Image (cartoon, rainbow, N blue to C red; front, side, top):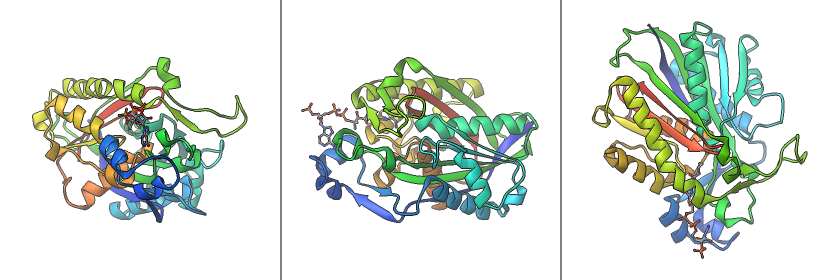
Length: 323
Ligand code: UT7
């Protein structure tokens, strides 16, 4: 049986760090409120010349170096983003060109904060379906460019960054002892689309628009939706929370992360948390967190790792993989 195995990982952050105390000067907020309600202490903000494509390219180059590969070895690039450089072409083709890759295919996937889960699921389907041997999966965002910097209920929450993994076809035995992606679970429900959205777009206002969120409403649904897709991953593979080495959640809010882990009986020592450092970087948050925990030696070859996310749409999903 063909499995999609992680061959390399990498990440990239903008140069500029913005602390909570800097935000106190922009809007009526406080470091204490932000830390207590979200766990966020700082975020990175893209500066001049830094875009989703440049951050994505840097993360991709880091992943290629980590894998000991070059762009010539890739078949497909899938970029998860909701903050493309342009409405079209896809930012993935910009990254493809920046990497000097002129073969294969590159495209964007848009599922907001669940984007990386959707992109990994797509890559896994390409690999298992025999359409590609190596897929570069990137999550890259510049949410700072769609924030309303006068709206304290949203501007304190988000940040910019990029992370990437390379998935490679490898033969497995078809058991949960295999390395690679073991199951993917995707969900969406457009009935919730107005709880977290951008109030602009090419076919409506002809403008880019700004992020709008009913935070409390999103929060209310988050833990239930996350638990749903994690339980579905356990059921599909016959695994339990006890088998997990690491939970790498989407990094939106420390309270959501802790609440979900507690509900599932996953000890907090097994949860990778980077929301304090990066804020919510939407589709970039999971690959950024993976990169941090794999670089510092926490996530090791053979570890059972569970990824999950929930966000605008609503979309939500999980990926269970053996690193
Ligand atoms: O990644 C995609 C998914 N997104 C999420 O998962 C976000 C989910 N939502 C959340 O994380 C939380 O709902 C927030 C962090 C956005 C807000 O936390 P909360 O505990 O739900 O606060 P709240 O919205 O109920 O607001 C509590 C109070 C309000 O004041 P009143 O009405 O009680 O007087 C807000 O106006 O906090 C006020 N407030 C702030 N105060 C200081 C809202 N934003 C701020 C702020 N600084 N930045």
